[in-house]
Image 1 (cartoon, protein in one colour):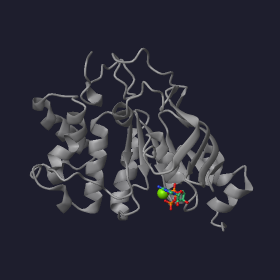
Image 2: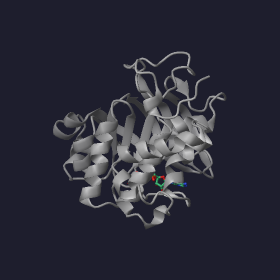
Image 3: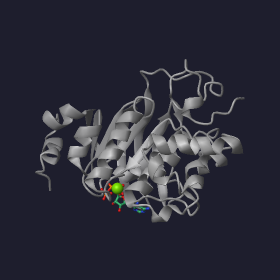
Length: 281
Ligand SMILES: Nc1ncnc2c1ncn2[C@@H]1O[C@H](COP(=O)(O)OP(=O)(O)OP(=O)(O)O)[C@@H](O)[C@H]1O
Ligand SMILES: [Mg+2]
């Protein structure tokens, strides 16, 4: 079995989906949904958080997840790579399929799922190790490359996120002296280094200034169609700038899902219209 060491290592003829061409039985159909939730209902203890969510996340597109505080956006996002599984009192019914297969199928290894479905959090979370080691942490954990390749993987990924010039002389330094925006870019480089198929972003720019926000947004656009992106944002202007598709959640229900321009300019539901025009609550 060949081991992929990053997206640039795949054969040119293979679409850049994040799936090693030699490990899967076949490549997914590009028209098919990347992630699909079917009748997903989720609760923590007695509290029902998501109710009957049916949604298809379009492969190779940016999908924004919008909705009021507490509507379940983070919970839905975290479900996509099974980060709620260990939360006390967590229960779910319904299913989530990745490339047509349940993410809870007994044959799915959690490590492998999280390599395919990466995540970036609201606050940057570099690991307590050098900048260089941060970038290649996942590559090492998944044994995706030999020692001699790590430096070039780190350079490529840091260049991809526009951080190479700022950190090339301090790869052995702690990441905690980087600015907040730089730390978030480092976390993005780390997430990209394992060649994810899907990237989940939970308000990735909410603690960043407009310049850092703009660089993250343009990076997000550069990731598609190679990677499928789902981004939670409270910033409706950001959803309009970066997202091809938008999902509106309210009180744990999926109210509407469609093309971003339609959702903002001609929403089908009155509830969506009130939210996107700021007349909510
Ligand atoms: N671990 C948990 N245990 C119990 N309840 C939780 C847990 N995590 C989230 N919740 C509840 O689930 C509901 C949805 O939370 P979630 O974080 O998904 O909302 P959100 O839409 O991301 O909100 P925000 O925009 O404020 O980030 C909230 O009522 C929250 O209190
Ligand atoms: Mg949230």
